[in-house]
Image 1 (cartoon, rainbow, N blue to C red):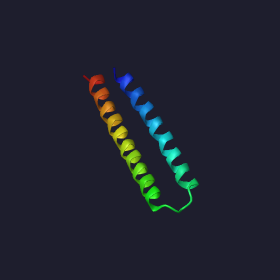
Image 2: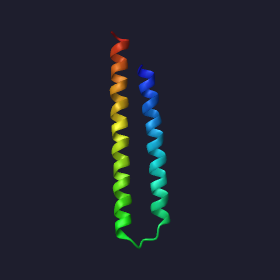
Image 3: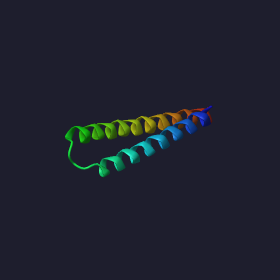
Length: 72
């Protein structure tokens, strides 16, 4: 069960990383004309960063439960 959760977390992390890279490329390709677009892309990048943090916490908790079960 722990392996399935870990693989799922890794998959979500990969999706978030690809999303971040796409947003960064779109942001750099757009001309600096519209401040609303730049603000929206910054907000989207912040949301992706929050997703990275949640995945990291999930992996830490998963590792903790795994260690508890190993030493039980």
